Length: 472
Image (tube, rainbow, N blue to C red):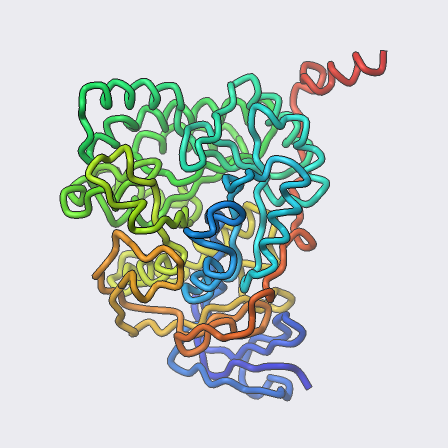
């Protein structure tokens, strides 16, 4: 007798939808099909009228622990994920201390013992820890993060020389490098000039970070990846301009993927007066033409996936009349799925398209496929049971993140996850967090399958030359 059968639902895959039951045992899916083909189960849950989606995989969250737990911790962050139909998260390294060494990775992993959902951990790729990258990979980081531009935590951006060496090392591991692709020197110069002139209104943030900072950074990173064979991922695509170097790199065969976030799809510069400093995020929300271009790129597959850059801060840290003093970012891991399902309800995309961008493509890009990102035999039973007709209104006071502030306050949504299962266990049921499941989440290291590295220019690589020198 198996553990659980979900009966009467409609299973959604990247290829379409079909009425089917789903049988689960030992945390894995063991059968998908007609009711009469299901094995006997200890529990049956009727999900008739609902759609079964692979749980979302959000490869871009900041849970702030260690160091900034007044903003968020692994308990509250993964509670928000569970409520949002997100079953796997990849957590960023700009905590305090940053995740730049094996000792700090162990500290981060200890903090993550509170996780309710499965997770990956990023290791930092910076100027001062190039010598730590191989050890971080061996110790179990799931990807690297390179901050080409400054953001929360004020980690120094590495020089292009350090990036090149870091890419050479990462290429050998097969781990993907996620890029905060903004050019630090341009932004620092422009912000200093604006501040000196006393310009501090919300739109000044956009002026300090025009789209050229992303265009230049994406192009530069793509060339480094092409030369080294590194696998790279462009985070939080915010502008129409950076889509061109992304497309050109893909056409050249660079192993490059890209994501965008709901704020770049649903908000524009027209919202700055209304939202003030609450809208401040890195990179900034831009014009309507940018949102339109990103929507087109997401639907065409040029932009591979949806993520959130879940970046919680307290209301006191967010609200400031001087834009330079307002912290950047806001929570998003709980609201992404309802926002995107609303667009499905409006006919802007299909559920199958959404499954591909929210689960399938992230799983493939970060080595989790076929264990995650799909509903099929052998896969982890990571499932969002969705009521496509459920209407809700986003309200900060009801968010499970510690950050009680959102630029989507008051927005009505259509469609919501009414249950969330992580490896066959309900972590959210009937729109209520299931108690007692802190610690249910597991790091995905044991299932992650890295792409075989494709070394380039080995004889010219710095690591090769240094190794030769040491041998001599």
